[in-house]
Image (cartoon, rainbow, N blue to C red; front, side, top):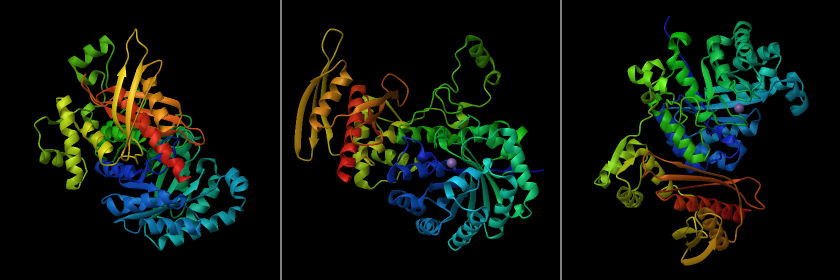
Length: 507
Ligand code: MN
């Protein structure tokens, strides 16, 4: 029997973006969607159009720009939501409306306060309405794994009868286990008379660390679509991780006997890009994309690997595109840069290209070799920057083991140049003090992370901060990239300060 294809439904931009601290603006979502297309996922859930004007705009822009994958929007099973989703998806080449309503006793009785028959009626109405906008309609009974099985059969039979082409079985709260989920999927297949008219989809959360295991179990039971996110980001403990599911299927095709169309060589780059866009780092020992995933420390393992790679390695780093590729150097010209940017999916105006090229030359002078990651970092700084109220003009720091660290900072605000100095317990603290004195905003650093963007002593340093500002409920994230890590630290904090200022202005 021929191996069956598993549809990869990526929800990084919808469920993933709901994870605390992961919010992205429209431009950032567009960059991510472009990379998801290169990764070759089948469906991109671009957002939840009715949830906010920003989300509507993101779905619409992605629908306009991204060709290839199906673009989906989430919608509650209510008229207004389905209409908003349909409208936002209008420019898409291929569109899907994904509508949902809760079915578990706790949700139906305590949250919705409806009867079970009313819930079915509302689901059917939403599906029918969605069919006016597209032939591709997905329905999710929210909290399916805590719902009554026979009731699930009833509601799913009804929505399929009325035009749902995919039925998703969400483990909304990450409660199920592999065996139980397997049995649930089998039960639905065996007890819904018209189930052959729809694709069964899986959607698992990781509250008990079983999201990937549960998803794979559902595939074994006969589901044909799996919903997942890059790096496993998502509500609370996150969603099932795309890269783990895809690589499990690829590495153990002998066992699962299915395949995906994902271009696994783009996995590492996709993971890194998301990390950059959200500031959410991946743990070092994370399966597939963690820094240590392919590092061998024990002497006995290193010995084995040198003699025969497969002794301790079941995947090749190159399978996920984990290799720093030298792309450009000091002598590369503007056309070379333009070509590489196009290959990475960035199309720039001549004016933008000129700006990026100027920065590229400066970087190439400091570093001998410029990697894809460096170029993506430049793009983020130059072409898609956050709205800047203040920009860093210059920075001078004195520090050492016997002096009090002191920073002098010059910022530009429009035509104005503002200079101030401060001291601190360390050079970074001194810089942050000076920035706060100039901007008049005082924040509390809730996290500070630094990492090298590429390898080697001359690597670009990337600093991510999360800052709590008085009067702003959520933490504001900031990123900065520079060869000098103090400068990167300054840029990251200034980035957060600028966002906070815009936030306050919009209030
Ligand atoms: Mn979810």
